[in-house]
Image (tube, rainbow, N blue to C red; front, side):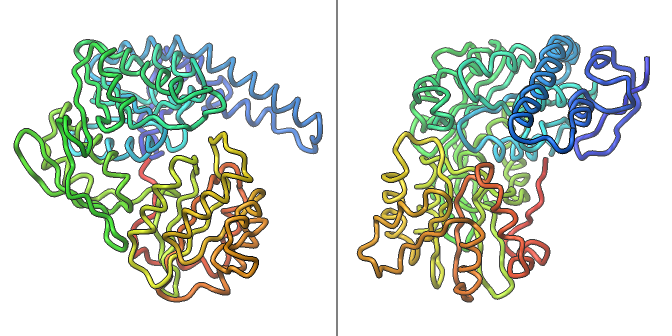
Length: 453
């Protein structure tokens, strides 16, 4: 059997070990994984049109077959890791931030691994499970649900002992059909937990709270309302201030200070503290750990442009039900001018000709100027008070928007960009000019932009 090099959590090489369960998952052609081998094997140049479509379908079939055959091997390897607690995190939004905050809290006392940034399907789970070693005390995996039944193979393989559900929203509504179906799929995580495990649930979300009735595990509710074991109060995140709040648990009141932007992240912080409690980490130690976590890339991530312009980048995804959260942040912010830029909005059954005017009207209540961009942006102009109304503008692309912003932004302005970057990959290119370089490569007075995964 060939020795296999396994990456450690930060991308280096941890050890050369013999792992019988990974023999299939690794290719005989060197040290590359099945995914990497297949991607390179199918890297055929000059394929376009119908041929490109067929090529992509064939490539995905090959990769899916490899992952499916690897699942029982991963399940057997997971079963052999008796000293490691497997933790699953799911929900409609906030999963990645919650996962990395949990990792920060647990790492204060324990060693472990977490799934990579953006890898919340079978491939990411397989890689993470095979990185577990005998000295690891936790394996933290983000679980994405993209339609009915998509969580089943993940849960059968990893068999979580701790499950965290952040919320239930309208993400992937076209695949599920209804929010109730979304909740049913997310609830499979709590149902899969053993009686010795823990269900960490957002008690302020009614659909998540109901999941406790179907779980055999112990339940710990967190939230801002009544009836939660871990409760936040006096929540504040008024720009340029960062998120802070008081947390109450078993009669103790402690103040929490973070580097995150936006009150919505209070639930992610509470979930991380709750998981820490179930792993024997005192509340004060957990609070100290989350205080050092920087904002995550493209998830309400702050920058300062060289001329004193604040830029909030929230363009990882823009489900329609998360747009009001962005407007709440902007409305509370202190700035000379507040500019709200809205791109592609996903997961809403309302037609664009009605959706964008609605958001434009709501944004105008809190912003000095609303800039819509992308394919459907022109629909938002219907919210104008008149043809000459300068408070609502529309641009055909992110590039056109950036050209306008570079000419009009002034010191003291606050720009909030909300979009679905995966739907509009030109956003990265548009915001890469000289005007924005100070924000990306220069000092970060508004927080570190590095990912921790």
